[in-house]
Length: 198
Picture 1 (cartoon, rainbow, N blue to C red):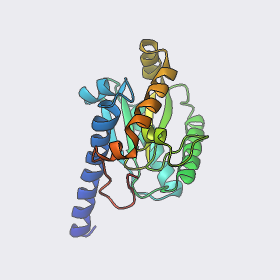
Picture 2: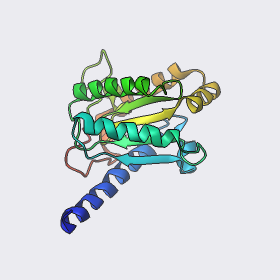
Picture 3: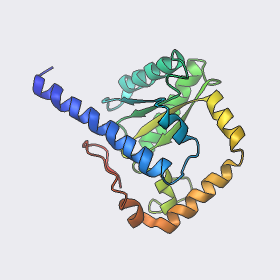
Protein backbone atom coordinates (compact mmCIF):
# COMPACT_ATOMS: atom_id res chain seq x y z
CA UNK A 1 0.00 0.00 0.00
CA UNK A 2 1.20 3.52 -0.80
CA UNK A 3 2.63 5.13 2.40
CA UNK A 4 0.36 8.18 2.00
CA UNK A 5 -2.70 5.98 1.61
CA UNK A 6 -1.62 3.86 4.56
CA UNK A 7 -1.17 6.96 6.75
CA UNK A 8 -4.57 8.28 5.69
CA UNK A 9 -6.22 4.96 6.49
CA UNK A 10 -4.57 4.88 9.91
CA UNK A 11 -5.95 8.37 10.66
CA UNK A 12 -9.39 7.30 9.43
CA UNK A 13 -9.27 4.28 11.71
CA UNK A 14 -8.38 6.46 14.68
CA UNK A 15 -11.20 8.90 13.89
CA UNK A 16 -13.86 6.21 13.47
CA UNK A 17 -12.96 4.66 16.82
CA UNK A 18 -12.72 8.03 18.58
CA UNK A 19 -16.03 9.21 17.12
CA UNK A 20 -17.71 5.99 18.24
CA UNK A 21 -16.19 6.20 21.71
CA UNK A 22 -17.39 9.79 22.02
CA UNK A 23 -20.91 8.70 21.09
CA UNK A 24 -20.73 5.82 23.58
CA UNK A 25 -19.54 7.96 26.49
CA UNK A 26 -21.38 11.24 25.79
CA UNK A 27 -24.69 9.81 24.59
CA UNK A 28 -25.19 6.13 25.44
CA UNK A 29 -23.54 6.25 28.88
CA UNK A 30 -23.90 9.91 29.94
CA UNK A 31 -27.58 10.05 28.99
CA UNK A 32 -28.26 6.65 30.54
CA UNK A 33 -29.56 5.13 27.30
CA UNK A 34 -28.26 1.69 28.23
CA UNK A 35 -27.68 0.85 31.92
CA UNK A 36 -25.36 -2.02 30.92
CA UNK A 37 -22.85 -0.06 28.83
CA UNK A 38 -20.75 1.64 31.47
CA UNK A 39 -19.48 -1.52 33.18
CA UNK A 40 -17.84 -2.97 30.05
CA UNK A 41 -16.55 0.47 29.09
CA UNK A 42 -14.73 1.16 32.36
CA UNK A 43 -13.27 -2.36 32.33
CA UNK A 44 -11.98 -1.86 28.75
CA UNK A 45 -13.86 -4.98 27.65
CA UNK A 46 -15.17 -3.50 24.38
CA UNK A 47 -13.47 -4.39 21.10
CA UNK A 48 -13.73 -1.68 18.41
CA UNK A 49 -13.46 -3.13 14.92
CA UNK A 50 -13.68 -1.17 11.66
CA UNK A 51 -14.58 -2.60 8.28
CA UNK A 52 -13.73 -0.58 5.17
CA UNK A 53 -15.79 -2.93 2.98
CA UNK A 54 -18.73 -1.42 1.17
CA UNK A 55 -20.99 -4.40 0.63
CA UNK A 56 -21.27 -8.02 -0.34
CA UNK A 57 -19.35 -11.07 0.70
CA UNK A 58 -16.29 -9.14 1.83
CA UNK A 59 -18.36 -7.36 4.45
CA UNK A 60 -19.98 -10.59 5.62
CA UNK A 61 -16.52 -12.16 5.89
CA UNK A 62 -15.49 -9.35 8.24
CA UNK A 63 -18.56 -9.90 10.41
CA UNK A 64 -17.94 -13.64 10.53
CA UNK A 65 -14.31 -13.12 11.59
CA UNK A 66 -15.46 -10.85 14.40
CA UNK A 67 -17.95 -13.46 15.61
CA UNK A 68 -15.22 -16.09 15.61
CA UNK A 69 -12.80 -13.73 17.36
CA UNK A 70 -15.23 -13.00 20.19
CA UNK A 71 -16.14 -16.66 20.47
CA UNK A 72 -12.47 -17.54 20.98
CA UNK A 73 -11.75 -14.70 23.44
CA UNK A 74 -12.05 -14.81 27.22
CA UNK A 75 -15.11 -12.72 28.25
CA UNK A 76 -13.01 -11.12 30.98
CA UNK A 77 -10.76 -9.73 28.26
CA UNK A 78 -13.38 -8.83 25.64
CA UNK A 79 -17.03 -8.89 26.58
CA UNK A 80 -18.52 -7.36 23.44
CA UNK A 81 -17.60 -5.99 20.01
CA UNK A 82 -18.68 -2.88 18.10
CA UNK A 83 -18.16 -3.19 14.34
CA UNK A 84 -18.25 0.15 12.53
CA UNK A 85 -18.72 0.29 8.75
CA UNK A 86 -18.05 3.86 7.55
CA UNK A 87 -18.37 3.12 3.83
CA UNK A 88 -21.15 0.51 3.89
CA UNK A 89 -24.95 0.70 3.86
CA UNK A 90 -25.50 4.48 4.17
CA UNK A 91 -29.19 3.82 3.49
CA UNK A 92 -31.02 2.50 6.56
CA UNK A 93 -33.12 0.01 4.56
CA UNK A 94 -29.93 -1.50 3.12
CA UNK A 95 -28.49 -1.62 6.65
CA UNK A 96 -31.60 -3.45 7.83
CA UNK A 97 -31.07 -6.03 5.08
CA UNK A 98 -27.45 -6.42 6.19
CA UNK A 99 -28.70 -7.10 9.71
CA UNK A 100 -30.92 -9.88 8.37
CA UNK A 101 -27.94 -11.44 6.62
CA UNK A 102 -25.88 -11.14 9.80
CA UNK A 103 -28.64 -12.94 11.71
CA UNK A 104 -28.59 -15.74 9.14
CA UNK A 105 -24.83 -15.97 9.54
CA UNK A 106 -25.19 -16.59 13.29
CA UNK A 107 -27.63 -19.39 12.47
CA UNK A 108 -25.27 -20.87 9.88
CA UNK A 109 -22.40 -20.81 12.37
CA UNK A 110 -24.70 -22.39 14.99
CA UNK A 111 -23.93 -19.68 17.56
CA UNK A 112 -27.34 -18.02 17.92
CA UNK A 113 -27.54 -19.40 21.45
CA UNK A 114 -24.30 -17.58 22.33
CA UNK A 115 -24.44 -14.32 20.39
CA UNK A 116 -26.85 -11.74 19.08
CA UNK A 117 -26.72 -8.40 17.30
CA UNK A 118 -27.78 -4.95 18.37
CA UNK A 119 -27.75 -2.30 15.65
CA UNK A 120 -27.20 1.44 15.26
CA UNK A 121 -27.16 3.73 12.24
CA UNK A 122 -26.91 7.46 11.42
CA UNK A 123 -30.41 7.29 9.87
CA UNK A 124 -31.94 4.84 12.35
CA UNK A 125 -35.73 4.74 12.26
CA UNK A 126 -37.92 2.66 14.53
CA UNK A 127 -40.87 0.94 12.86
CA UNK A 128 -43.95 3.13 12.95
CA UNK A 129 -42.05 6.41 13.38
CA UNK A 130 -41.31 9.27 11.02
CA UNK A 131 -37.65 9.92 10.08
CA UNK A 132 -37.71 13.15 12.07
CA UNK A 133 -39.09 11.59 15.25
CA UNK A 134 -36.83 12.46 18.18
CA UNK A 135 -36.97 8.96 19.68
CA UNK A 136 -34.97 7.64 16.72
CA UNK A 137 -31.97 9.46 18.18
CA UNK A 138 -31.55 6.72 20.79
CA UNK A 139 -30.18 4.35 18.12
CA UNK A 140 -28.42 6.85 15.89
CA UNK A 141 -24.67 6.39 15.84
CA UNK A 142 -21.95 8.23 13.92
CA UNK A 143 -21.41 5.24 11.60
CA UNK A 144 -23.43 2.16 10.61
CA UNK A 145 -22.62 -0.14 13.52
CA UNK A 146 -23.38 -3.71 14.48
CA UNK A 147 -22.94 -4.56 18.14
CA UNK A 148 -22.09 -8.19 18.84
CA UNK A 149 -23.34 -9.25 22.28
CA UNK A 150 -22.77 -12.38 24.31
CA UNK A 151 -26.19 -13.88 25.07
CA UNK A 152 -25.09 -15.01 28.52
CA UNK A 153 -23.96 -11.51 29.50
CA UNK A 154 -27.18 -10.02 28.18
CA UNK A 155 -29.23 -12.47 30.21
CA UNK A 156 -27.26 -11.57 33.34
CA UNK A 157 -27.79 -7.87 32.68
CA UNK A 158 -31.52 -8.37 32.19
CA UNK A 159 -31.74 -10.20 35.51
CA UNK A 160 -30.39 -7.05 37.15
CA UNK A 161 -32.75 -4.80 35.17
CA UNK A 162 -35.77 -6.92 34.17
CA UNK A 163 -38.03 -4.03 33.15
CA UNK A 164 -36.47 -3.39 29.74
CA UNK A 165 -39.59 -1.62 28.46
CA UNK A 166 -39.04 1.11 31.04
CA UNK A 167 -35.60 1.84 29.53
CA UNK A 168 -37.12 2.34 26.09
CA UNK A 169 -39.94 4.51 27.49
CA UNK A 170 -37.45 6.64 29.44
CA UNK A 171 -35.30 7.14 26.33
CA UNK A 172 -38.30 8.24 24.28
CA UNK A 173 -39.23 10.80 26.94
CA UNK A 174 -35.63 12.00 27.16
CA UNK A 175 -35.21 12.61 23.44
CA UNK A 176 -38.61 14.17 22.97
CA UNK A 177 -37.63 16.64 25.66
CA UNK A 178 -34.11 17.15 24.31
CA UNK A 179 -35.04 17.35 20.64
CA UNK A 180 -32.60 17.42 17.76
CA UNK A 181 -31.08 20.74 18.85
CA UNK A 182 -30.24 19.38 22.27
CA UNK A 183 -28.73 16.25 20.78
CA UNK A 184 -26.66 18.19 18.26
CA UNK A 185 -25.32 20.31 21.14
CA UNK A 186 -23.44 17.21 22.33
CA UNK A 187 -21.09 17.81 19.39
CA UNK A 188 -21.06 14.22 18.16
CA UNK A 189 -19.85 13.81 14.60
CA UNK A 190 -18.51 11.46 11.97
CA UNK A 191 -15.19 12.70 10.66
CA UNK A 192 -14.72 9.98 8.06
CA UNK A 193 -16.60 10.62 4.84
CA UNK A 194 -19.34 8.10 4.30
CA UNK A 195 -20.89 8.25 7.78
CA UNK A 196 -22.58 11.33 9.09
CA UNK A 197 -24.52 12.12 12.24
CA UNK A 198 -27.83 13.60 11.21
